[in-house]
Amino acid sequence: MAACLMTVHAHPDDESSKGAGTVALYHDAGVHTVLVCCTGGEEGDVLNPRLDTPEVRSNLARIRKQELNKAATLIGYDEIRFLGYRDSGMPGSPANSHPHSFAAAPIAEAVERLVAEIRRSKPQVIVAYPQEQGGYRHPDHLKAHEVTVAAFEAAADGNVYPGAGPPFAPLKLYYVVWSKERARSIIANFRSRGMNPPFDDRWVDKLPELSDNVVRVDISKYLSRVSAALHAHATQIDPDSPFWAGFDPQFAYPFEEYILARSRLPHDVDNARYGLFGGVEEFLSTAATPRHDDVGG
Ligand SMILES: [Zn+2]
Image (cartoon, rainbow, N blue to C red):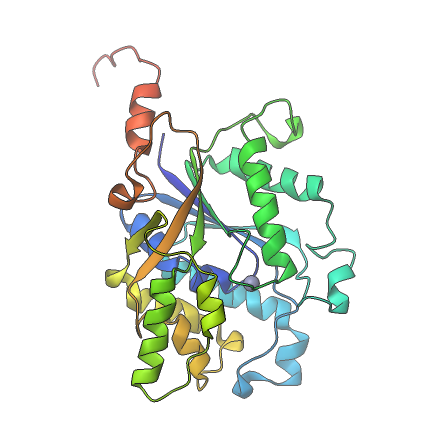
C-alpha cells in the first residue's frame, strides 16, 4: 500500500501556515499528499491593501480557490479535496449561522463527508488541529478539530456511514502545534529587528513545551517553498505587515511541530526520531497478507 498523508484544514491559507514544509518533505520522499479543505474561505478579509478592490471582494471565493491551487502546487500536495462548506467567519459574526456554514453543519454530516475522503484516499497518517489552539477560537478551526477526531475513529468502523465506502483504519492522528520554543524564537527574532512581536507572553504560556512529546520536523530545506506558498495567498497577506513575518519560516524557526493524538500501531514508536510515519512502514509490512510468489516477475 502506498504511503499517504492527509491534512485537514479549515480555510485556504491554513495549509500554508500550518505544516506546509512537512508536506513538502513527505511529498518529495514519495508519499501521496492529500489536502482536505473544509471551507472555501468566503469570509476571509482582504488584508492586502493593493488588492482591496470591489472586483476582488465580489469574486473572493473564486480568487481564494485560485490562490489555494497555486499554494498547494508549490507545497507539493497531490490532491485538494473540499468538504463543501462555507466559511463561518469570525466568532460571533452573522456568517456563523449561514445555513451552509461549516459551523452550522450537523456534526454527523460533516464527519460522514470526511470519512468518505479518508476511505477513498486511505491515509496512514492524518494531521489535524488540536482542541486548544493557543486561544484562537475561530469556529471553523474548532469544528475541523472535532470533525477530524470523530472521522479518524469512524472511518475504521464498517457499521457507521456504510454509504461512505468500505472501512479503512488510519494508523496515526497528529495535531499540528506551535511550541513555546517556536513562539519564543519568533518573539526574539522580532525584537532583534526592533519590532514588536505579534504575540504576547500570555499566549506563549498556553503552548506546549518541546519536552511534552512534541515531534519536531526539520523543514530547513523547504523554507523557500513554504514562503512562496504563503505569499500565493496574496489577498490574505499584507506584504508590509510585520505580523506575517511571524508565520514566514524564513525569519526564525525552521521546524514544524506535532503532537501524536491517536495511534493504532501495536507498539510505541519514537516519533521524535522517526517522524510522522515512524512505525508505519514496519506495521504495513508485517500486517500485509502473504502473497503467492509472482511467476515470471
Ligand atoms: Zn483558518
